Length: 174
Image 1 (spheres, rainbow, N blue to C red):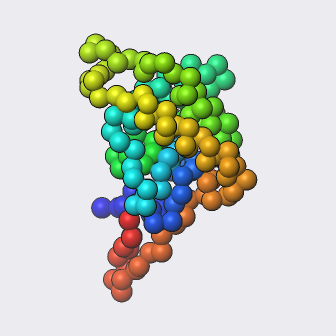
Image 2: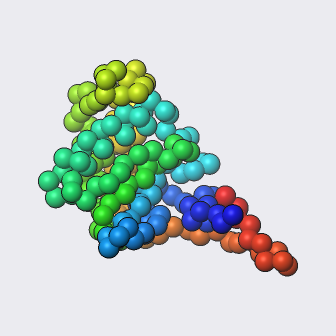
């Protein structure tokens, strides 16, 4: 079985940032999955589940209401490791091209007075939210993006060194 591309990312070297995870063609449309990494894996704590859930609701709502981008957004959701999110957009843009969108989305969390979609009818775990911690994580990440905007490391994945055995098997360190 082939390893998926995200397992070839060196998780010991990745820093918070915006990265292209994969580009696919669906019919005649390019679709890009972005890795929006909020914390440094295996170094910083992951985002707690309730804050991550609130960030999912808040930022998905922001993205799907942004007048310039709402028709491009396919998906926004958390990574299983709780160190970031996946953003899937129509088209094939470089991570730098969506920097302003991602930055504005995270900055918008500071203005939230509540988390949208948190009733039993709207959410499968409507009590599992933490707006205060979501705001803290969003502000921390937005400040980081601003401070490192000129740094290529927040836009380019570090790749793992691959051990290849004599019989051609590839091993990954993540």
